[in-house]
Each structure stands twice: as structure tokens, then as C-alpha cells.
Image (cartoon, rainbow, N blue to C red):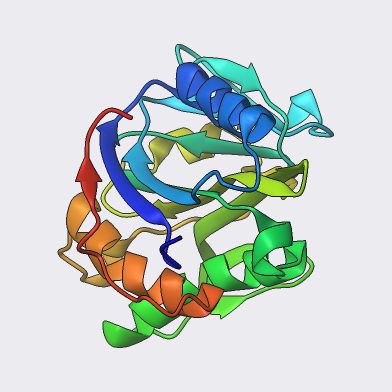
Length: 217
């Protein structure tokens, strides 16, 4: 089996059907199921993790709120934000949850470093921060030894909806995006640059983005 996972750039995808598809793949996969990493965007939606406090949604307005099965509190997804879903057999790869979280965070830190931007991760509050402002969030679910959900990186999305929530459960936490840091990459350009960095951080030996599948699945 090819060492590297299949990379899928899926464009703009509705949230709930994508989540259900990830669940289905995870529940049906076996030792022969190839790993995949999805790169996509979602229409505007707030998502609440399994133990999230509903009061962290201050004013949802016309944006739907979906309670889901990842860890973490509340976050926002919307067009212009790159979402990365690693559907990986962690047991087969010999990866722990902490290692996967760190790989996702460090890939973003590597991407930002290449653009001349210093960023940090926080163990007590997973994600990536630039000058104290959150630019990427991480929330995962591990089931049957495999991962789904993942990373959300603000590229050129509208940041106003974040003012309607306590971001990741932290009152007053500010957010930022690549566009405000002088990075001109759009979502697909960001995905293509981030992908090999993530593969390297995950320890895959076949570091290539030639396997991009531009499809709705």
C-alpha cells in the first residue's frame, strides 16, 4: 500500500453531510482501507464539541449551530477558512492522539514560518497563535483507532462571526487570519502548501502532493 494518504481538495462542502461521511468511513474501515486527508471549506456554521457549554454561543443569529462528536468547545467554520480532516488509521501508523495534534499544529507553524511569521502552539489550549491571537483551531475524534475531524485555519474568511462566540470556550480570545498577516494565498493555495508540511510532520516517507483528487468525495 502506498505510504502516503490520498489528498482530496473538496472545495465548499456542507458541514453535516461531511461529518456523517467521516463517521461512516471510520466505522466501516478495516486494515486495508487507505488513509485520506481532506482539505475543504464549509458554509457558515458554529459547531459545539461533545462537552461544550452552550452558553459559549453568545448570539448565533442566522448561523446554524451543530452539536458534534469532537473534543473541544465551540468554533466557527465559514467560506475562506481551510478545514483539514485527517482520516487516518492511527493504530496502523503508530500515532498517538497528542502526536496527531502536534503534527497539525506544527504544520501550520511551519507554513507561517515560511511566510516569515512566528507562531506558537499552546498545550493547554490546542491550536496555533500569532501574537496571542488564534489563527488555527484543532478538534479531533478518535474511534476504532482512527481519527476524524481535525484542523481549521483562517485564511481570508470573515472574522465577524467569531465575535458571536467565546472562541474555543475562552472569553475575549481574539482571532486572526492569513490575509491580515500579509499572506495572499487563497484556500486552495494554502492547502497545497500545507499538505507536504503536514505529511512530513506525520512521518510519511512519500512526501508528494501529486495525488490530489479534486472531487466532491
